[in-house]
Image (tube, rainbow, N blue to C red; front, side, top):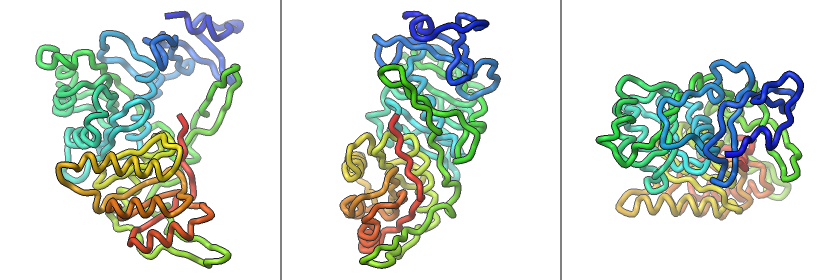
Length: 369
């Protein structure tokens, strides 16, 4: 692998060969990565100079595979942890190519192993070769379940007694012997809500120009931040949603919103009882993302089951009622979305016709990672 620093950065006076300065912040190279997004792309991982106990900068590799981490591995760890950080109860995100194939949080009486199974089986086909992130220390029973299928990386704030033994048991679990185990400390210190201290996001354009932007955080903390869908229209007057979510629907709406923060836009998340049923991602149009998610969920339930009572979150507003009609036909009963369309009146009317509860967040969460 090429010397990434020598290729792209100029050493300033007083810096060691493994140090760089970007936007006034100093970074120290941790290691050269296996590769970048693709095997022919060189990459390296840097941490803030002098960091101590930062979740990603100071994560610890407890078990390595046949080779080191790639850029995609690190990005999947980041996005997975960025989902589970929002939950107090045990939560799990199963990541593929920077999108969750499934996510789940524990309900009353559920174990961490139960949560992992829910997240994995939300899209079992996509979960093959995934990166799995937890917000609680990995338990031995969960590690045993993880080793039943092929997983590339498991990331957690710690690993309980027996968990690493299972991940290292190559005699019993030959097909998953290359799994990597990463300890990510201090997850609770990560920024979650608008106003929390946070580093900017930086994108590099083709000529080396940089875009520095505020990170994507949400102002939605509790159900009280989910506003009953309402709009004023010069022709149609005031249009209001007729049904508010139930307590269970509010919980699922919050859950789906937090998952959607790390779904590539256009993003749609369908969930029920703290588990994603399907994720629609990367579509160029809103109704396409809705249809994609519904189709995924229906394939999951081909052997029986239904979407009845599920909720849906959308990272952007609905430009017209077609998405609401599609959601209603699938059995979805509550929707969370930013609001702000010039046709909100039509969208709210459609929800009222179908008996769907709808709430606005008054913020868009497009993620174009």
